Length: 229
Image (cartoon, rainbow, N blue to C red):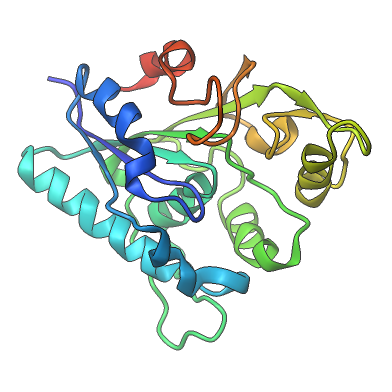
């Protein structure tokens, strides 16, 4: 029997945006999206701790393990959900700015495969850099050997200061270089990890609200769904 799967939405996204992806995956494996609402992200704005998201992810994972009497899950993190998932599976206490009590979940034994979709694993932007440096410094690359890391990037828009300013600016804030390929928000360079199974999908856009194909569309799904245990 396939392992159950948990989807963690991207920054400022709600679970509703992932309904199509969830339904597609349910044909193959029991799938649940962390029940986030957009307002759940408000307390994390401005570089504040992402502890509330970690706690909701943890409660969802525990519920799924109990419901399906499973010992492991597959974890899919879209955009920021990918690096938040890397904090979640880690065993080093996470203490966000201004917090007094650290959080540690040490969930890597419960995660068989971690798939990140358009996740910026690095950042030059001051509001997110602290959290991403915490991940990069403590869990570099495909850190846990008992977890299969699959990192999916999009090659869709080449950043250009005039012709594609939004992509250019986002890429520059992420990896320090605007003139590069990415999904319109995350450059390929930032979406891959050393030691992971790194995938590039041409024509895929960053968010589930995009027009056309995004990472969870049926056309894109075929490139990475085979990695679910």
